[in-house]
Image 1 (tube, rainbow, N blue to C red):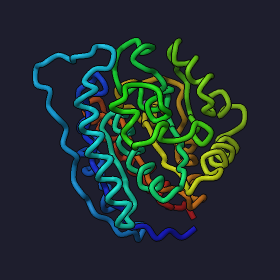
Image 2: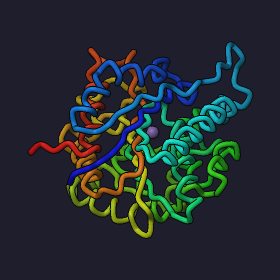
Image 3: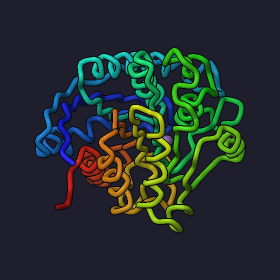
Image 4: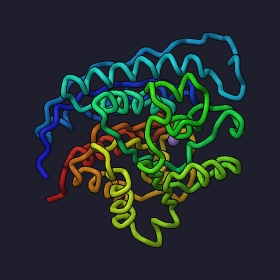
Amino acid sequence: MILDRKVSLVGAPLGLGGVHPGASLGPVGLRLAGLEERVRALGLEFEDTGDIAVPDPGRVPPSDPTARYVEHIAEHCRNLRDRVESLLARGRFPLIVGGDHAVACGSVAGVARHHGAKGDRVGLIWFDAHGDMNTPTTSPSGNVHGMPLACILGHGPGVLTELAGRVPMVSPRNAVLVGVHELDKHEKELIRSSGVRIYTMREIDKMGMQRVMEEALAIACDGTVGFHLSFDVDGCDPSVAPGTGTIVPGGTDFRESHLVMESVADTGRLLSLELTEVNPILDVRNTTSEFAVGLIQSALGKLIL
Ligand SMILES: [Mn+2]
């Protein structure tokens, strides 16, 4: 499939949603791994719109231990939302690079608001080792990067759930979790009751990634104008993506990870793309950033042949 995209990079160097210093350097890592050159090599137009500012809480401890720094995170997400929305209005393709996964509240809000204003629904593919379906009441840590999917589906702090001006931002019937292999006890209950479709690593082992993606994409595209892909690099196995804060063994391997991206590209319905949780401080010679840029190339239509 030939894609004619005008790609606009948005750096979202948020680190307040997690606990490991260094997720905020993700945009630096991917830029140094040649993101711009490697997108241009696909024949696509590219602009780097720079980073969204991150409010500095200084030494002040989080006001709410059940949703740490949520007001700072919400401010970042509002600005990210507005940037994504204005890029879409200009006919650009937003490529958001995190930052911890809490940035997805802002990205998805921007996409949902832009298309929602025209009466269109959007779908969501959420690739992750985790469910990201905690709320302040269920989260064992209070870290907001474990809550963004819940917020997008309408559960969580109002400053995040209401970012798109519609709750939920995305209907659970068009949202799909792929690659999950670690869930917290109480988030399992919300996943079950929310109606979101989930393909864990067990389904990927049994069905194969190709069939999983066929089903997932059918759900995300059902009655929608297209979908947003939110890709957390921790869903990939540490053997291919060691540079991330919440490592869990048993993720997707090199080819499975690329097949996710290639399947997404084949649909021609990808509205925006987000890659999060690369942590250059924890990485090995920028391996994870290099790998992530390769994944972005595949999602933008790079073919082996
Ligand atoms: Mn995540």
